[in-house]
Length: 169
Length: 370
Image (cartoon, rainbow over all chains, first blue to last red):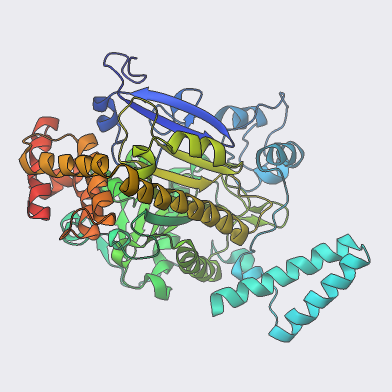
C-alpha cells in the first residue's frame, strides 16, 4: 500500500485510532512519519478525520453538520454557517447568539448540553463541613420527594463546596 | 475588585519576569520531570496528562481576535502568572521570538502543540519548573494549561492543575456560563475544558498480537485510543494514548475516574501478557530484546522509528528483568532525546535526516554505556 501522505513511498506504518468505538486508520511511510513529527509517540497523537490527520493536513472541523441557518453572532459577527465550516466559535457571545442550535449540537456531541463540572473559583459558593453535611441530607430528602429542580440546585451547591475543599486542602 | 472589570482593568505590572529568548540549551541540560520513571505502574505507563482549556472574558477567541487583542491577552497573563505560588519558578517565552527548530524542540518535549509550531500571531508559553506544568497562551483558546506526571498519576496531575486553575481564576475572569460551563473555541472542549490522557506502553500485548483485539473489545464510548498499530506493519514503540472525548455534562472527577479505570484495565492485561510471554514464549521475547540490544550496540544508522521501537523493547526487557543495569528513566529520556530537533540542539547545528540517523545511534550507545 502507498503512503497516504506522499502517495509515492510504500506505507509501513499504520496509525490507528478508535474514537467512540469507531476505528479509523491511515497508512504512512517512514519518511513522512518523521517529517511530520509522527515518530514521537509522546508528543501526542494526531486525530484522523475522513482520512486526514489533523494538525498535519490542516484542521478540519469536528462538528456535526447542521442545516443552514441565517444567524450571526452579535459581537464577533461570526455566522452560523462559517462556524459550521471552520468548526470554531469566535467568542464567548457566540454561545448566546447560537444558543438553540448549539444546544442541539452539544447534545449530539457530548450527550448533554448542561455543564455540571466545576465553576471558576471566584464564582463558587463557599461553605463549612457542617453545611455540606446538611446540604447532602437535604439532597437525599429532596430526591425522595421527587423535587428534582431543587435537587439540581442543591447538587450544584454541594459540588461548589467540595471543589473548594479540594483545592484548599 | 469588580469582577466585570477584572480582565480589562489589569494594569501591566512592573513585576520582574524571567524571560528567555529560548534557552533551549538550558532545557537541554535537564530532563522533563515526567520522564523520570517515577509514579504508579511506571513500567507500563509512561505519563499521565491533564489539560484545561480556558478563555478570558471580554476578548474574542484567538481564531477571531485581532493581533492587538491577542497581544493584550498575552500581556495580561504575563503580568500576573508569577503571583501564583505554583508558577513561581516558571519561565515565560514569547513564542514569536523562536525559530522553527526551537518550536519543534518544545513540541518534542510536549510543551507545545503542533498548531503552535506554525503560529505567526502573538502567543506565549509558560514553563513550570521540571516542565510538569506548562501554559500555552493564544493557541486555540487563550489558555491551555497542562500538567504532566510520570506513571499513572492522573489524580496528582489533576490536583496540581486544579490548584493553578483556581489561582488563575482569582486573578483573571474566565469566559464561563452556568449552562455551558467554560466557553471554548471548539465545542468539543466546552464544559469542563478538560482532556485527560495516559500514554501507555503495551509491548507484551503487541508481541502476543492481542492489541487489536483488546482495543476493539474494550474501547468504550467516550474514550479515544490512538496509536501506531495494525497487522503486518511496523509498530511505533507500542505506545498508545487513551483520552476522554466528552467534556460536557460530566464532572471532572468522573472523567478522570473513567480514564483511570480504563488505564488500570489495560495495565492488568499487559501485566498478564508479560507473565504469559515469560511462561510460554520466553525465548521469543528474549530474542526480541537481545536483538534490540545488539542492534543498538552495533548499528551505524538508526531511524527514529527504529529508535523508538528498540527503546520500547528495552523498557520491556528491564520490566521483565531480562536485562539489568539500565535505568527506565534513561530509556524514557531517550524517547525524547532521539527526536530530530533534540538531536540538532544537542549537536548545536542543523542536521539532515541521514546525519541525524548516525548521531542518534551514537547518542543511545553513550547514554546506555553500550
